[in-house]
Image (cartoon, rainbow, N blue to C red; front, side, top):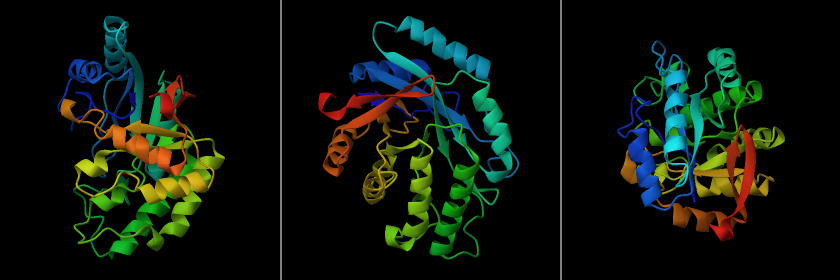
Length: 266
């Protein structure tokens, strides 16, 4: 089993060291993990979320050697994309020895979704559509990634009473998924939506099924763990859900190239 979305002490919102994450993954019987710490320039319109690449890679290389007989450890990143920082993000990715890159949208209209004022003066549908419009723009103009992360993360925020159903934004979601597929990129099944008590994964299973129906086959599995206890959260059920949809493989990456693993053998 593989967990391809986790955050260590190199992310400001994480509460586990690399060592703690690795030892928990070994304890759970995982065969491979990938650290994907946060890189978000002007996250809230002003401040960067970043880390020392040299220290990051040195740390991973140290643990790769230390645990080489117990687990495979890959070096990844979760890059938060906004239209005005794409060149900087691309330069960082292409000049660094990442195995795997998750592209995400954490900020829209230069406001972070978590604490900014993005939702002010917008209906729920207007907020969702603006989020997906900006996502479509960055997907069309940024190619230095492997999978798009928690594609419907917008549903976590805004304080709305109910989650807007896919039918309300299916047209633009279809365009996004088609763009991802046409560029030989993938999406992730991120199990954190269950932890956030949203009742579904990120993205929701109806979006994942829509991706599959459109021809999408590249998918990774990630917990989005920020603490050790959340590593590989709900993975068994998630794999069964993927099988029910029709997926036969999940992907891992080495030097940005995918390797596919049969779900039935995991």
